[in-house]
Structures are given as structure tokens and as C-alpha cells.
Image (cartoon, rainbow over all chains, first blue to last red):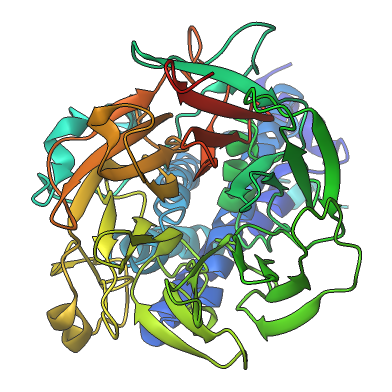
Length: 150
Length: 439
């Protein structure tokens, strides 16, 4: 088989579901939501917002871990095609910043958010929004050449 | 590039975590007295937690006392004894109690609860007062009987005339007491409500009566470490109340005392003193717990500032006027010792060294490394004021290799002048007597 035949053969297989994008999108959304929640705390000094942020970040981190496992399965099982490194790096950095941030948010009262927590959730939200507009996937979706569509 | 960003992030994380863990507390003696050394506050990344593991007392084990004193267990197998109180006929009341439970808001609240439980803080209290009576005068009680049942997280107890007052976590109740009674079964008379509610973070309500018996003083702790449960739930908390004994009318007598766990009148001057537990999580040597005179209308800083005008940046919005009027406490006990019991000595019964001063029980730290407290100390007084370094009196509550055998809480003097100690982790009541007075 030459290269183009190989591609054609792969393309005619039914593309299998990717496990990770749903998990990445849910976890990423939680981490993004922590930023407006932090802003609300910054403006109101009401602890309910700081508490909400700490749960949002904790939830986002749990999903980040599950998503990482799902991604590994996607890659190993061959569901996922080449890894999109930009999204991968953005997600990794956002997760690590959020890991630091969940500890910042475990402080008591004002300094659990202001200023470090606010900065970290703001940067994480920015990185994740980029990923969101790029489609929440880390591996590229299998490409079906136009001519081979049925 | 990827590998570089990975290793940079990892290095940053490791550095941050290490710096958060490496903070070790200094020599506590630098924070004794009127001018404790106060380091710069430090914001943690990981909440500080360092709790020894509860192992209890083995048969024959006791805390250590200095030469010339002796210590014996006068009651064991109790259910979380927190406070002891001596009645005029020599009977000793033991308040067996623990917190009613609290709302949890964050993951941190769950984790800290688990960690503190290691040292026995989650053990169930009996919500009861037990009476101990020594009928033959050998110091060892030969009668032990339930005295009052069905209380609600009680802590303070005081007898005035023929009325016995018990500070439950949500109210002060009164019982008619006749000398020699061994059980108070009549329904209690409610004197007044106390701040409690669903969070009730610092639940203990300490209690003392004025020397003339007309007023009661109640210590009410804050509803958080440092306002992390919101400012609105701190209404009426972190304060010492004055309650009219006959009418139940109450008012805030002094404020800004984060957790005033022990109240007592200095016998020479009839001045009200309090031990107060200060805030956590800004460093192993911040903020020292303290012993201080309580002035009518005085404000002692919490939450806005500590040790006078040291502003706490975790509190927002701040209050410059409150900071400006914050009173500097009289005497530092060093940080995180968790002073929970206070009693003034009455005579030389134990030792001439302990003739004039205050005994203080230090329940022990949970968020400081190395741990601090876990002992009963004596602070000498002169002219109605603390004067001199603390003297360790009852020690060795800690066991080998990060374990704890018992933790001292409430203190009282029995009718012979011996020191009585409630130990809520060892579930024991200890009696410290002079070897001469032990009889």
C-alpha cells in the first residue's frame, strides 16, 4: 500500500468517538467560570463568590485529571490523530495555574482571591477561551479527504 | 519549548510548595510577656496543618509535674471532659462536651476537619455534667454520678448563691442547687440566649461571675478564623458579654476578642481577665494567644488587627477607626498554644512558687510545626498584673514520635487548693497536689 492508499483505507473506516473533548470542555468551562466569580468577590467582598470560585476550580481540576486520562486512551487506542500541541500546551498551563490557584483559594477571606487568585483565574480563563474557540480538542479530528466522502 | 515550559512550571510549583511547607516556628519563649516578637505575616499556599496522633494514656501513665508535686487521675473513661468546677462542699463538676457540628463551605473545611480529628477533636461529647465526690478526704473521689443531663454543648459553669449557671453553646440556663445535691433533675430555667447558629465555629461559651455575684460574664468566640464565613455572621461574636444575673439582660462588655475561652477575676484586684485564642494561617509565630485584662467597652482588634495596630490584610473591607482603638493585650502566651483553661491560684497550697498568679491550660496547636502548647503553665502575678516568665507545671501530654496522650482544657482548684485539670483527649480528670498537702 502506498501512502495515499493507506490514507484512503483509514478514511473509509468509520471515525470513532473521541473521549476527551466533552471532558475538556466541561472542565475548561468550570475553570473559566471561576474568573467572573472571582471578579464578583472582588467587587462585593461576599464570601459566597470566593467559595463558589474554590469549588469551580476544584471541579475543573478533577475534570482536567479525568480528561487527561481520556486523552491518553484516545491517543493509545488510535482514536485520536496527531496531537494538536498548541491546545495541549494551553490546557496544560491553564491546569497547572489552576492547581496553584486552588491552594490560593484555600486561604481565608480577602487574600484567597485578591490579588493572586484573581490573576491566576484571569490568565487561566484567557488561555482556556483560546482553546474553546479552537474547539476543545487536543487531538485533531480524523480528516476525511473530500473526495472520499460518501 | 514544551519541555522547557514543563520544567519551568514544575520548578515554580515545587518551589512554591516547599516554601509553603518549610516555615518552622521559632522559640515560643520569644513571644511570652507584654512585648512578644511578631514576625512579618506570611500567606500560605498549602494550609498549615501539623497534628499529633491521638493514642490516649496507657495504664499508669500520667503527665509530668515538677518535684514536690504529684499528679493522679481522679476520673477516667469520661466522654470528652472539657471543663471542671468545684462546688463549695468540695464536689467537682466535670463538663463532658464537644462542639455541635458546623456548616462546611469549602473543600478545605472537610480536609481540616479530618486532620484535626487525628488528635481527638471530633470525639463525641456526652452533653452532660458528672459529679465527683471525695467522701473520705484522700483526694480520690469515691462517688461518680451524672449530675445534669441533656445539655447542648456546655462549657462554662458557675455557682452563685443557690443557682448553678451552665453556658450551653446557645443559651445560659440556671438550676436550683441545694448543698450536697448529687443530681439536678428539674428542668432548667433559661436566663438568656447566646450567639450560636448553624456555623457556630468557636462554640465554647466560657463563664464567670462577678465577685459580688450580680453579673455573669460570657466569652463568645468568633464564627470563623478570620471572617472567611462572611462578615454578617460575625454580628455579636468575638466578644465578652455582661449578663445581669437576675433579669438576663445582656450587653457586649468588650469586643474584638477572637475566642475568649477562659474568664476569671484576679482575686487581689477583682479585675476581669481573659485568655484569648488568636488567628491562624499567617505564620507559625503569628498571632500569639494572650492573657489580658478586659476593660469595659474595650476593643481588642479582631478581625481588623492583631496585637494592637497590626492590620490583617485578609479582612475586607478594613476599618481604620477600629484598628486605631484596638487595645494591645497585656501578656503573650506564644502562638497557636490554644489556651482553653484559666484559674487564679488562691494560696501556697501547691508550692510557694504558685502563691500568686494564674494557671493556664494550653490545649495545643494544630497548625504549627513544631507543635506548641500541650501543657499547663503558671504565670506569676505581682500587683494584680502578670509579672515574669511562664513556669511549666504539667507537661508530657505529648507522647513519643508525633503522638498525643491527652490535651488539657478546663482548670479549677479543688477545696484543698489542688489543681484539677480536664483532659478531653485522654478522657481523664487529673489532680495535681503538693506532696505535703496531698494527705
